[in-house]
Amino acid sequence: MITISLCMIVKNEEDTLPRCLDSVQGLIDEIVIVDTGSTDRTVEIAKTYTGRVETFPWCDDFAAARNFSFSLARKEYCLWLDADDVFLPDDREKFRQLKESLSPKTDMVMLPYHTALDEEGRPTFTCYRERLVRSHAGFLWQGAVHEAIPPRGEIVYGDAAVTHRKLRAGEPGRNLRILESLRQKGPLEPRQQFYYGRELYDHKAFAKAIPVLESFLQDGQGWIENNIDACRLLYYCYTQIQKPEAGLSWLLESLKYDAPRAEICCEIGQYFLERHAYPPAIFWYETAASRPRSDYGGGFVLPDCYGYIPFLQLCVCYDRLGDPAKAAEYNEKAGKLKPSSPAVQYNRRYFLSQGILPSAVDGLPAEGKSGEPSRFGKDPDDQPAHGNP
Image (cartoon, rainbow, N blue to C red; front, side, top):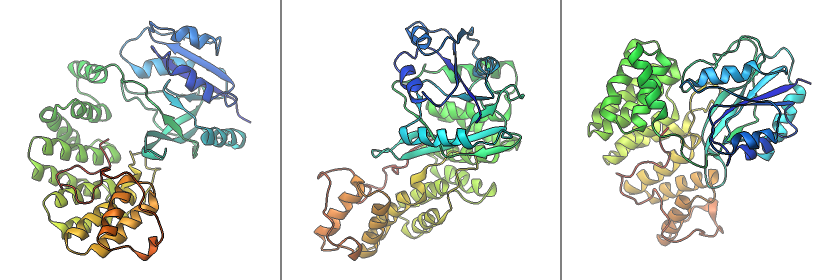
């Protein structure tokens, strides 16, 4: 069985660090914690878990700090976590099984990273990350922010997810400040250029983000998933500056990079739904519902776009076209994916009030609190319930 060093960089994480380290007890063989300038009890808490606590002078470079932590590993593999990450009980057992069965020839293990969950604990935003790598084998983090390890060698995909459970906001503006400082020193490499545009979007600097993202795409050096995501971000930016038609052109532009993602199809469907153009909206939502989901491509995945959101929006479209029976059928398809969804329950009560109840749900109670929000019957100017990256 392989041995694992958990290598972490931390700063002012006294409220989250114990939860993280408790979640890996019995799973790893060594804990290495590198503090980058805490002023709270983080270092004191870390020392109750391990004698391997080091300091690293912060230099606005996450990759440098993580590479230093990896350099201290004494076991065969390095595992990285942030202080607000945890292994939930089911994933602890999956990780234990992975550790026991992993071939020693493996160079890198990719694991799911769940960064947002719904009310029932199901992931609504997920991606695969390089979670476990062979120690002292030349695997280096790259990027001052939004750092990553370029994949190579024998790569294994596992299902032991890490769940991100943030308790508080991070340092405001830190990533944007670092990227702008790097930009003053010279052109950003493609991945950092993409994330610079994304940081600008997150800070609501929409007009400034547009040329950054367009330049990133025009340079043609980006990774496919980042290209597609940049197109979606441009749609959001143009919509925010009241130029939705220009935004739509970027959603359509994304189709040249690869087969359409369900996330893109949902956005295009929403564009037409907001304009009461129900037939094209239906086409795009049906396309979204038919798209296969692949988490292994490395991009961000919104699981609700692969069924739940399209079915709920098709319910809206068909009701507005005067076909409530078909609308109710789509609502029940959404309900099979999320039985306790407030939107589904709200819609079900609406259809019951109209004397419409699909045979598939005969005998089911119309649960839920009255007045709960639902996509059904709401103003189409509302944004879809699948969120932004």
